[in-house]
Length: 556
Image (cartoon, rainbow, N blue to C red; front, side, top):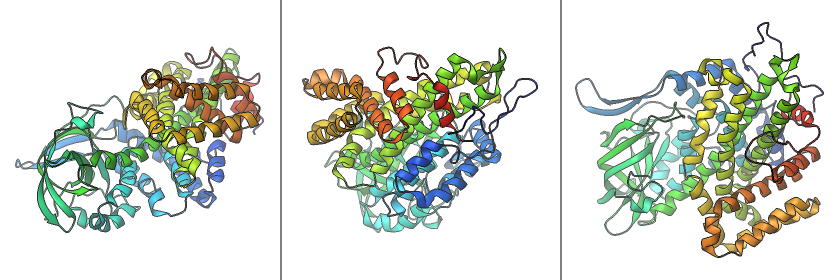
C-alpha cells in the first residue's frame, strides 16, 4: 500500500489541466488483478501479462484505439463494376488493435492451453484489453467461444483448428483454406423475435454431404449479424424435419466462390463504434451443420455461455478504467486550494468507485477461473453465477462510467479531452448483447430450476463464508435468498431482478471477505447492505477512512 494519494503521473499543470494518462502499465498498477492471477495459479503468465499491460497503456496503443472508434467501419456492398462484394472497410487502426488482441491470446488461449489456469490468464488479458478498446473484443471473444461448438463437427474442426489456434490476425477477405487464421462470429436474432430465437424463420434445405459435413442452403435474414467480416458465422436456421439447427456459414464457399450473404446496412450503434454489426440476407447461402439437427439453440447457447463470461470481464475492465481515469483526474485537478481527490466528498465518491471496481474484478476473475475446474461447487457457481455476474457487473458499468465522467466535469463530456465519452457509450452494450438484463435473471432462475442441488450447494458455500467471517449482515442476505427460493415460481419470477441483485452482491461480499483487505471487505458489506445504498454512488463508502481505499486501488 502506498503512503500518498499521488498517482503514477501526478503533476500540477500551469493551467490546472490534467495531463493525459498514458505510457503506464495496466497490469503492474492493478494490485487486485495481479492477486487474482496469482490466486488462479496463472503465475506462469506473469511476464507476458506485464508485457501486455505496458502495451495497452502505451501512447501508440491509445492513439490506435481512438482512431479505430473515430473512423467507423464502412459498408462497401458493390465493386465498381456492379458485382456484389459485401465488404466492410476498416481503418488500419482497427486491424492494429485486432492484431494485439489476437497476439495476446484473447481469441483462443483457454482452448489451446490445457492448464485450467489458462482461464485465469485469459480473463486478465481480456480485462485489460477491454479497458483500452472494447469493440475489438467482440469478434475476438466470439472466435474463442466458437471453438468448443465447432468441435461437434469433426471434419470441419480438423480444417479450422490450426486457423483458430493462430496468434496472427489475418485481415484478408479470402477463402478460409488460404488463410493463416480465421475469426468466427454469430448470427442468432431476427427482426420478428429478438431474444426469442424459437420464432426464427430462416430456412435450411439439405444439399448433400461433403468433406466439411452435412451441407445445407440457407435462405432468410438476421437482424443482428455480429462482426460480418468474420470468415464464418455460427447461424441458427430451421430445417423442415426439425426445429432450429446450428450451421457454420463461411464468407466463401469451398469452391472459392463468394457465399451469397448480402450485407444490407451497418447498424449505427450508440457505442461500440469500432466494431461492425449489420443486417443480412441469406440467398441460398452454403453452410454445414454443427451439432445435432433440431438442437441448434442449446448448441449455440454453449457459445453464448462463454461470451456471457466475456461480457462480465469486459464490463469489469470498463469499471476499472473508469475508476483509474477518475482517480487520475481528481489527483491532478485542483480546486479550493487542494486536489479534488483530497476533498472529503470526492474522496468518499472515489472510494465507493474503488470498492465497486474491486468487487467487480473479483467476481469476474473468480468466475473465469472456475471455467477451468471440474469441481462440483465450481460447476454450480459457473451455471448460476455466469448470468448473474453478466447482469450485475454490466449494469453497474453503465451507471458508474457515467459517474466517473462526472468527476471530470465538463471535460468529461468533450470527446477530445479524453476517453470518458467512449467508456460511457461502450458500457451499455454488454448489458444488451448475449441476453439483456431480464433474460439473464430468467436464466439464473432456469439454472436453479434445472439443478436445484446447484443452488443449495452455492448458498451453503456463501453462508459458510459469511458465518466464518462473522458477517451477520451477509448471513441475513443469504437467508433471504434461501427464503426467496421457497416462493411460488410466478412470484419468484416477478422478483427475479431483486433476487439476482442480492445473489450477485452476496457473492461479491463473500469474495471480498476471502480475498480483499479486511478494511475493504468491511467497507463493502457495510455500504452495500445499508438501506440507503444504491440510487446515488458516493452516499457511503462504508468506512471512516476512504482515502485508505484509494491508496490501495492503484499502485504507482
